[in-house]
Amino acid sequence: LDLGGLRGTPTVVSFFASWCEPCRDEFPLLSRLAAEHPEALRVVGVSIDE
Image 1 (cartoon, rainbow, N blue to C red):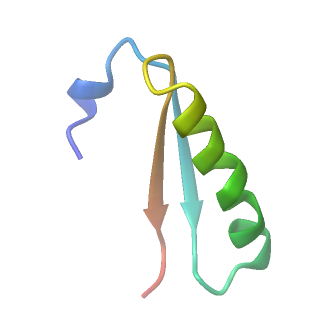
Image 2: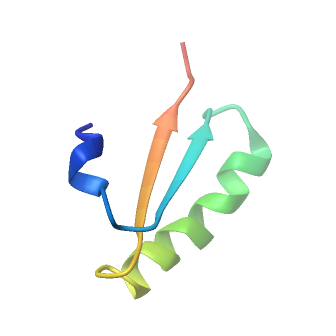
Image 3: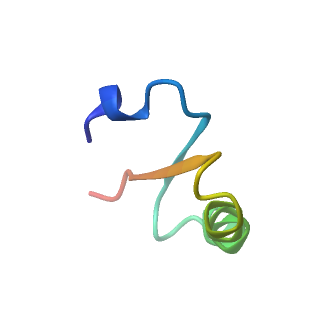
């Protein structure tokens, strides 16, 4: 991930794990936000699974 490429763009960073039910629940919302606002917002997911 090149953070420099995100400079100047509002970015949501979501830390998640496959075993985390609230994480799985928020995934559709974050996906929809990213799809609806591709020029205005970036969504970055970071898995903490081992």
